[in-house]
Amino acid sequence: MTDPRLLLRALPPVDRVLEEKPLPAMLTEYPRTLVVEAVQQVLESYRSRLLEENGGLTARDLAPSALAPLVARRLTRWFAPSLQPVINATGVILHTNLGRSPLPAAALGAIARAASGYCNLEYSLDHGERGSRQEHLEGLLCRLTGAEAALVVNNNAAAVFLALHVLAAGRGAIVSRSQLVEIGGSFRLPEVLKRSGAHLVEVGTTNRVYINDYEAAIDEQTAVLLKVHPSNYRIVGFTAEVDAAELAGLAHERGLFFLEDLGSGALLDLTRYNLEPEPTVPEAVAAGADLVTFSGDKLLGGPQSGIIVGRRQLVEKLRCHQLARVLRVDKLILAALEATLQIYLDEERVCREIPIWRMISAGSSQLRQRAERLAHRLEGVPGLRAVEVIPGRSRLGGGALPLQELPTYLVAISPQRGAAATLERRLRQNRPPVIGRIQQGKLLLDLRTILPGEEGLLLGALRFAAGGGE
Ligand SMILES: *Cc1c(COP(=O)(O)O)cnc(C)c1O
Image (cartoon, rainbow, N blue to C red):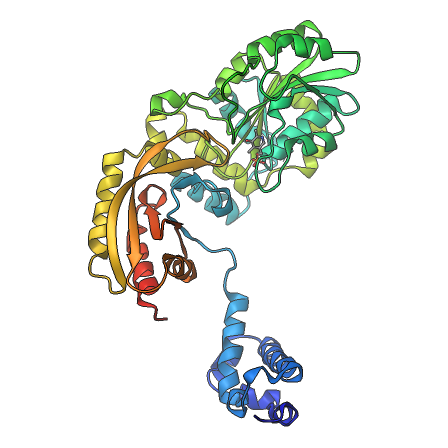
């Protein structure tokens, strides 16, 4: 074995590496300082490997011609997007880790129009003076929800936080113990609520809460009765909840505010789409909530945002608060949200144009057809042992309808050699990456969350993954 210290001396100087292919070409494409930095980093990593343990390196590894490709790869990576499109074959429609809702085409167009030049974000074209960014969507939101006023912030966590801070900081907010939820990504609602400055007063037990519990907890400190939608779990069996109208009645009788955090916030009657019923935003408003908060990128199918609708006087109060400035939403989001909401003006368009609603409403015979077509196209792909179409279940995800079963058909794939986990990992390494799941030694792909037009890319990805080649 070569003495590592001798090898250290064999490390070439930066200039020597720069002469090797493909670096001269890269020097015309990238600034010289960056290329030099990449060379220095590669040399440095080899130097530490040699100092530590030699790392199995030989003189050949240190040749300038062997180092140059490593430099090129490093440099390319600096310019490659870290945030990249992936193909979601998990069947989880509102997959928070995969970015929740893909946007409707109309929203993409709206983003491009708002982003590529100036726009009247905070400028009143009627008066030629400063306007409000919140005015653009308020009419639309009021129309779709029946509320008097509306405000959009960064996400629903921010919406709940702002509402509680403005209405109940330094005072009490009464909430049922059964609704103090953790939503995912370690987002614990009680923690956020406490940070708002409101004192949380928990009532009831894990499974049962009655109107009397709320009533008994009200004192001179109380400002708000709060109802939180149990998004990602259900309490079943011996249970009792107080409905929104009853809570609103009690709150108003005692001069308090009633706030409902709907989480997903459907604008449509879900039962019409064969889904379990969930309170819709218009229902929550009609039940008498003073403020209702919900997400823009869950069942609404739009961009990440938090929407607050409710009584004008309260929404005004929230809007004028300094915190509203901290949580304010960007013009691109407003543009995308407006375009998404406009689709709801014509319910016929919802399932056609909003991707998550297209996925939710996809029939199982249509999914079976797509799965069979994909399975058929996979038949000739080398490296795959078995490809079958099997029934399965898709999920809504995003903390919406956790018990809802969406019957689907899956393409189940077993590789010829090696484990399904290897196939799954290689699919993730494809460009674009494909995210599937493993069950009982098979790789499962759910066509429900695969967008139209992605099947060709998926086929290419499977060829790459099964072939084992680069
Ligand atoms: C998802 C959810 C939130 C948080 O909404 P984001 O838009 O993710 O910030 C808050 N409350 C409930 C009940 C939720 O389901």
